[in-house]
Image (cartoon, rainbow, N blue to C red; front, top):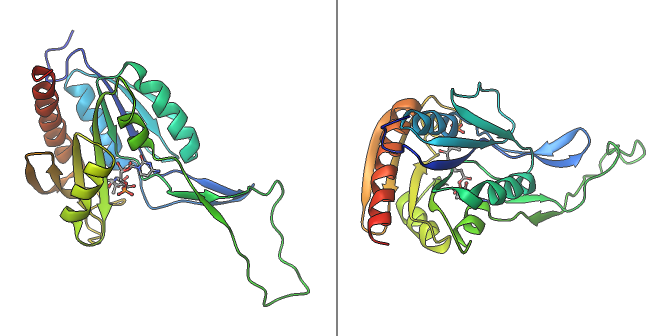
Length: 227
Ligand code: PMT
């Protein structure tokens, strides 16, 4: 029995990168370490929630009292998120999902042509499903929180993403500063909602996760009161 701000709530969180296979030995991915999403899962569990963490390939231990679901590609993560959010109260999309995947995956390792040493190679990419927008478009949707990793016009682009993807809240993250964002231990963000824009100054991802979970819990309960 827990008395925390999220006691009795089901929270689903995505974290880490996705990997998009080119052939059996190569893939396209990004620099997400999973630290931010795992810190959110830990903070949500500490706030009393029942937490399911859908994680891309990362090297992190699973926080206590968190159920972890490992996935590899964006399509795997999309399927897991759609399934896990069927009975969830809050969905937090912290994963750095690959927007594109190779159109085809070669069944055997792609070889260089020894007779054409100067020839390049072209990989044709197709769009991946948008996971957070798909969850937000569900008929019986949870309270949905997205992230926006931007390298310029951070607040403006984040606001635009919040509206376009129909999210309740979005966490704007300036990833042009390498001391915050991808793979760093610290982060600094701005939490944006319909009527708020709250900067949360630089601190450890663990501390920041605690602040974010507290604020998300507040906005979530306000949204419940309005229903
Ligand atoms: O993992 P760390 O090393 O700790 O780094 C943390 C982080 C920088 C990855 C994290 O703080 C962060 O910003 N996560 C979002 C990364 C991202 O992909 O942002 P985006 O602006 O491209 O996407 C916007 C939102 O849509 C995000 O909530 C993302 O999860 C979601 N998305 C994007 C594409 C897609 N196909 N499906 C999605 O659900």
